[in-house]
Length: 103
Image (cartoon, rainbow, N blue to C red; front, side):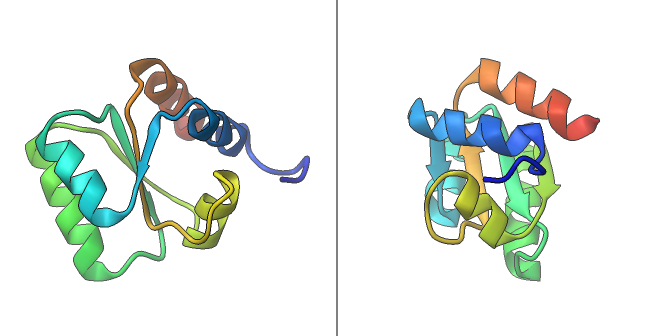
């Protein structure tokens, strides 16, 4: 990551190293149903079907969702290939991410 990257991307990398992330649409939706996630990040370039599914499910279970940059940026932040949906399990990390994303 470069110095120009927002602070939330660095924090997302820290969440990955702390093993507090779930990635992939099906795994994230499964953990949403189990109420195991504190926050969900959705890439802005996700398909319309994926966006609807994730937003509806998170809305029903009252889990906050933030639509963020593109899938390539999300994947790079956690040291993986492109990622469309990322779930954050830790309440602490989720609160800090929400604060940084709301700025």
